[in-house]
Image (cartoon, rainbow, N blue to C red):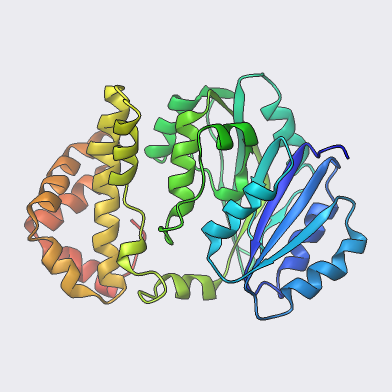
Length: 332
């Protein structure tokens, strides 16, 4: 049997209320040469039954696999292993795609033989109907993998797990899978490694997918029992990965050491406050390595003046930083 060109991998955990809308948006695609792989990750609701019922409506092969609850990273990795397509898309079980989503990403990734990733603009869609667009603003249609990675690291290019298409060959050749030890930020780590190994990345400015924002998801994200600090993304691990690869690009390494690691250190310290694990906040500020990281962040003024200011506050006026995020929880 002929293999599909595209595999759509959807991890699903207790998604009975939302997965019908997600699947229906794929059933309406103008592009037809694809398969859908739903990995039912230990759901206790009717997720599996709904997917099975929808098979009759699907214009593309819809495969539903059941496993014990092992987390989103494991479910996505299993989806990669089960996929047959030349290209892979990862989608959450509550998000919605436009009808030309797959077609435009396929056109982009096949625009040149050396393109390994294609990504599009997206928006954050809230329950009250508000939306926040995340537009790709690059004047170039194609970037080298490392150029795109640098933009990604500096947050000048916003890519979400559902707004990109990856060459399956890229992922399997370089063993790019989701880190199952990371619960918060595993998709970021995955993107960094995928973009690092990509030869070129194609950019599509159109908003083709909607990242649904649920208040319940935000509440769960502030649960330190569900997301303990040991499971948060640590960019030091990506730096070690690059060093193990023998990476010598000074600009790339400096971006990590002087910008990304300070940024994530500040976010971690902020999270200690918002998660009400304040002892970790105060204890961390006594650690010399963390203070040195914050000092490196002071020179990030060129890229992010706000980050430099937060590093300064943490070093010199930590109580002011604490009060700001204890009583006014804003995103960094």
